[in-house]
Length: 267
Image (cartoon, rainbow, N blue to C red; front, side, top):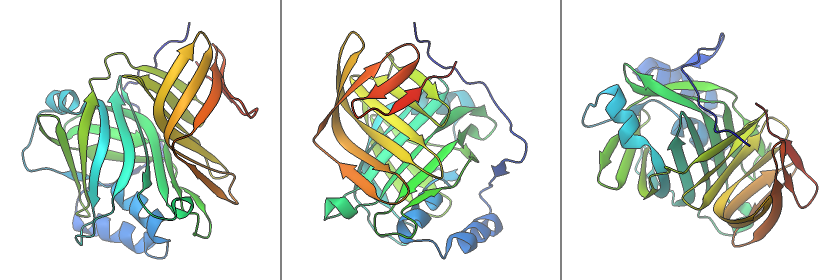
């Protein structure tokens, strides 16, 4: 039997911690200013959140847990960047995957993140263990920012979640489900989750990325992944997919895609 992964409150030596003050934000923006826009956006999207109403840490966890779909993203300068994506927050872990609504679709940028979260004195914290962005027109097309730790506050109104970052970037999401049936599986460089009839896959490092989400059907170990959005790269090219079906197999030791790729599950 595969067991859900439950994360505690890890602290890793050498990890970068960001605060919401202007000097820290300016320093990071200075270091990312020469990156392609898609990659700069992904870094800025993960900065410290600001909120209109403070909440207690445990309340923040409860307010945020669930399966969410994106309804919008607006940068600090007011630029709207429509995207299609998903954000799962459950059982001590989060997974996020999205592709921007650009045409031609093959040239659209994407981002994917995964890692643990926990309650802290700011609301809750998270570590993005996978911080991945793909830009088919970029040089390079794949960027991995490594592990980044954040303290986060959130604002929820009914089934709507608003996330406003220190950079001014605002993300909005709508609840798909409570994710009470979530199953989480950890890989060496990513994770797979199932919740409310959806799958979310985030795997990657400096050399390759495989990410996507959608609905799924399962018959014993056999899976059919009904892709809503999928983005992958071998470091040289990017492949975006939507509206396709991918055959896979999930056993106690690994996820296997029909093209032969294998992602071992770690305990």
